[in-house]
Length: 367
Image (cartoon, rainbow, N blue to C red; front, side, top):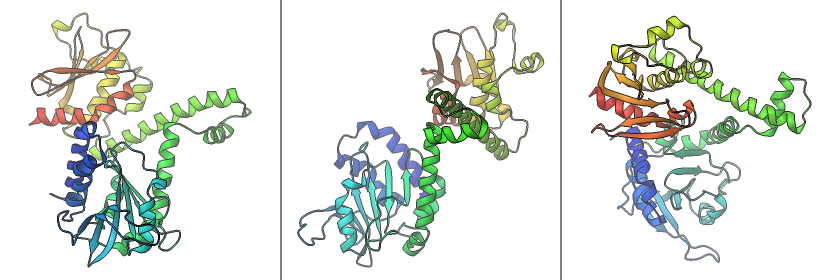
């Protein structure tokens, strides 16, 4: 199994088993030991490579242990402190890592809860572990840009000098990305005020800031959609793929364009295909295009639901959109036995939450 496959496999396991894990010990067995062995490539049963409950008594602090120490040539290289899945990773609760970092030759400290792995080194002061990680791996939201650096810590390609030399850039770029992501999710008052002053002459009153906070949030969501659309079109090499942002924001298509989209049969007489259904279809089609060519994804509307199909075959249903009810909308996903599970959605954007499931359905139908 390749390095990338091992990470993907562990992420899938985490997603499926996370809710059933209740203790720190179970977290170690289910996720952290597999990470050490399958992702990093170290033999967890060889004490020359991995030492569990590592002890390095010093000063007045005796008997304290670090959960794992990864060894190379008889020296400690990586120290790992574990928490229970779901626990917050507050570096202040990792006192053993700080102390052992100073009395061993370790240059890498890891604080993890089995899902998020925070990697630390000593950029700020020699032999003193930094309070901010230089690399953060979240198995449920993997940043692929950090994987080449993580690969350098594996047994086969261990290159500590290279990791440390690039750690400062990783540390600040990673921290900036997380701050930017936070601003996109919930714009801070400072950002709202900055942008408001650049596009408006309004004063920074509480009412104006509140109004512009909503506008900034809406603008950032639309900007992200447009970026995703551009990436999809570039990756697929197809400039004819419709963009999602305009469809979701304004689906005022011409009558002829709508007529081309609707596959009408005699049974469909009296069925009205809405702009919202077409917008949902375009989102599902864009997701499915990672597995099949876009022209293979079609749709049929009926009085009960709007179906998104593979190869225009109603026995190959990718998803069903139940948008006819005024009070609530659902997306229906079918398993291999054609059993449908409906998921409530408030907004079309929430379809993206089921990206993995939609792609798995398309793979299964394509096989």
